[in-house]
Amino acid sequence: MTASNSAHLPALDLLRGLAALAVMLPHFIMYSTSDASPAAEIAVSTAVEVFFVLSGFVLGPQLLLCAQRKNWTTLKIFFIRRWMRTIPSYFVALLAISVIFGSIGTADFFRYTFYVQNLFSQHNEHDYYPVAWSLSVEEWYYVSFPTLLLLVGKLVKREDVWHQCLIAALLFIITVSACRLSFGNTPDWGAGVRRVVAFRVDSIGYGFLLYLLLQRSKIVWNNLSRLLSLTFLITTTSALVWVNIKIFSVGQAWPRALYPFASATFGIAAVLFFLSLNSLVGRMSLACDFLGRISYPMYLFHLAILYFLARFGIASGFPGLLLYSFAVIACAALFHYGFEQPILARRPRYKAHTSGSPAIVGMTTT
Image 1 (tube, helix red, strand yellow):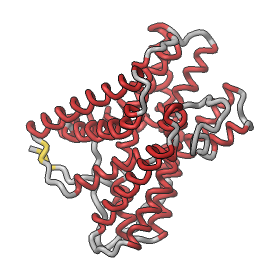
Image 2: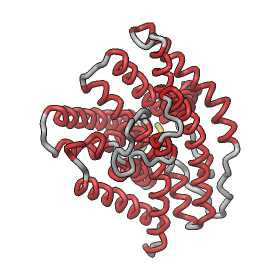
Image 3: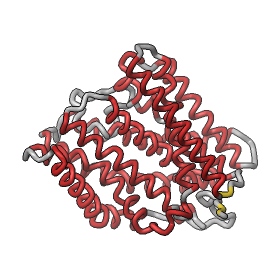
């Protein structure tokens, strides 16, 4: 099994699709009702945190392959595959929303183009494409962490690649966390810390760390393990809700310092719980696959569609919500099958290797 053709997990496609919906729908509520309550904002930010952990997890096989081979050719293929997956679609979405706001050619537009609008702080004067902050975190992770992974592989003289990857993941998470806690602008926490690449790129590393740990575990997904994973999810959800309440209700720094750790733990719990459901949702694999495929264009284009509908005064009320939801899903599907899929089909594949390539997760079920 090659890293580019790892075991398909419908449950993670479902999780990805649900996370996209959990961003798309609250944004409509926030825009159409001018909802000042934190509930909708918390729902959106939590869904994004799930995306981060999920992204690090599903990229685990490819990153492990890069660590195993320790050569520029494999790393180059990783870069090309990620950039072909993310950048063309992102640029189309950026053009669309920039047309709506008349911002093509502005300094803000070019900062978005090169994923630097939130590199060390919020650099744009007008943050007219707010979901782009998380996309910048993703892109910089694709560059920074694999580079560190290969560097650790060169410096740490251990035959076991798994231990090299574990050291790299822990070093990455600890270093970014230390920088965030030491230099983060806590009073301006949202724009100055939570949505800043330099302070949040570790969020995706937690997903890779989870992938590594599951590689060495012998989990049997049965009713007991499903119950345990559900209990873990409920516990981490409660903890994250509590941290969010404290962030909005007290003026102290400690809840904000805890948030990245609480959200990463929640993301890990969500991935584990959906992994435990994989054999159960397999019967809905076509629907899960569809949701997974359109999740990225849904995330990219939903704000442009929302702002476009608002120009015609039809971005409010239940009928507006139905129209908005249909428009986002339909446009995302058309965009994926008409634009994304042909590009994805042309991505380079990893060359065969005599030692084989890592599978995504060795799951057994009973």
